[in-house]
Length: 170
Ligand SMILES: NC(=O)c1ccc[n+]([C@@H]2O[C@H](COP(=O)([O-])OP(=O)(O)OC[C@H]3O[C@@H](n4cnc5c(N)ncnc54)[C@H](OP(=O)(O)O)[C@@H]3O)[C@@H](O)[C@H]2O)c1
Image 1: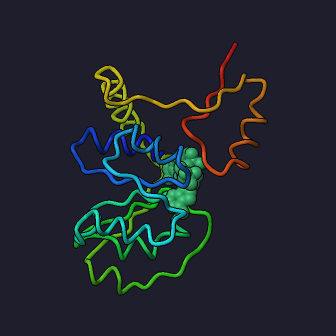
Image 2: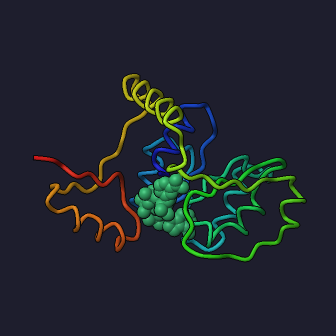
Image 3: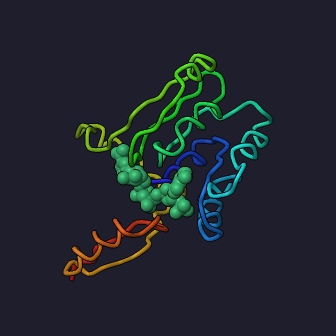
């Protein structure tokens, strides 16, 4: 999701700041459109992100691990900024005052609620992006269809994939 978000945001002309937890992940983020990449396992990385915005803050955060980051996100937002909740693996305590201080919003996003019209619109954009070359799907692990159960197991156990997991038929 993060790789696609970096490619799409860059194509839309945004300044893109990405994060990853390993040197390979940081390279992946930079190779997929981010102007800058930060290590979310490093102490004080949010200070570096704020410095990169010259203290102004972030307009839109695409959040993959809300139960760890949401409180920090609210403090990193620019005035009127928003956090979109994509991934969450538990609960977290936040101070609602942080949203007042920035007039910010928290918005949940769930792909499975997309209507067929929205899915068609997304597909049209993706095909156009792939034809024009600004959208380049990154393929990570590949499994034959007969190993689908193993693929599910590996996704659950793996700390973070580097690209899409693909099932190959035939
Ligand atoms: N809302 C929806 O409709 C929707 C749709 C698809 C997926 N999801 C959810 O979105 C999340 C991402 O999906 P995915 O397929 O992209 O999974 P993924 O390939 O496993 O990616 C998860 C990413 O989270 C990063 N991460 C780990 N610790 C982090 C931290 N402290 N702060 C910020 N990022 C951190 C990992 O980076 P490193 O490995 O480099 O640390 C990794 O790149 C999952 O929770 C998934 O269930 C939601």
